[in-house]
Image 1 (cartoon, helix red, strand yellow):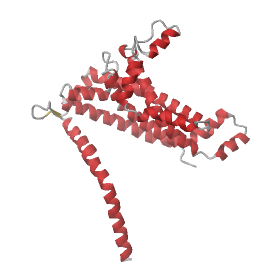
Image 2 (image 1 turned 90 degrees about the vertical axis):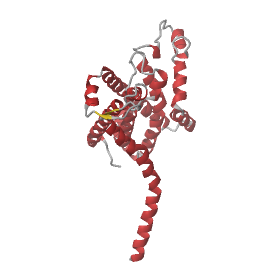
Image 3 (image 1 turned 180 degrees about the horizontal axis):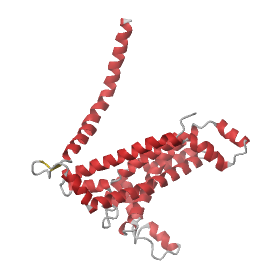
Image 4 (image 1 turned 120 degrees about the vertical axis):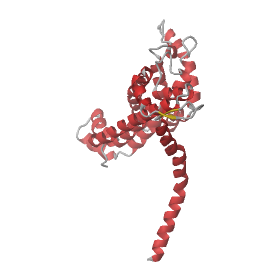
Length: 297
């Protein structure tokens, strides 16, 4: 008995030893910065002078800040379009590639490649593709008869859609792999039973495929929404929030206020609001998943 306890204690110590680097990394690079940002949101600090406690002043200023409201609306706009488009493309390609086509591994690799590519390199390439005068996209549009194609990142109207198209292209391959894994786990007997009952392709998709991949769908929805709220690199490289404030999203505004305007306390308050916003959306999703996610095999 004593020997068993010694073995259990030794195994626990080994487990803690393996987990320790991860915990240390989390504490140093996540927990401490989050707590520090929260405390900083109650202060006014420009890094040149000592921080001054201002209470909730930074939060009150947010509600009067037109730039913050525009950035919040732009973030919601980006999320509302990007997430559904990404899921539709990812699921559609997953269904196609799950049919056992010839060269399927090559197609999977090609669609996954944008996800592992550097966002900086991808954004620079898309900047060239979107060039209003010399970009291949507008050249093709002119060839098919569109005399005045969109000016993409130079247009207030088209700058955000341009960022969205690029983001969907880059990320849908990653979620496609998740959907393929979910589709592979569906028992073939369910489809056979549905066929015997006379279900056509749409009904098999509606009543077999969708319920069975609902846990994967739930995970993809949560991750993609969180990623959309954190969009930054493509905006920073392709548009710098412009033209005007057409693509100024929340994270880009936080970056601008902190590292260009040196208003670290105010930027921290914006970051806290973003965190609360993501937390509320995630909690709502977790509460709602009980109604549509099927965890039964």
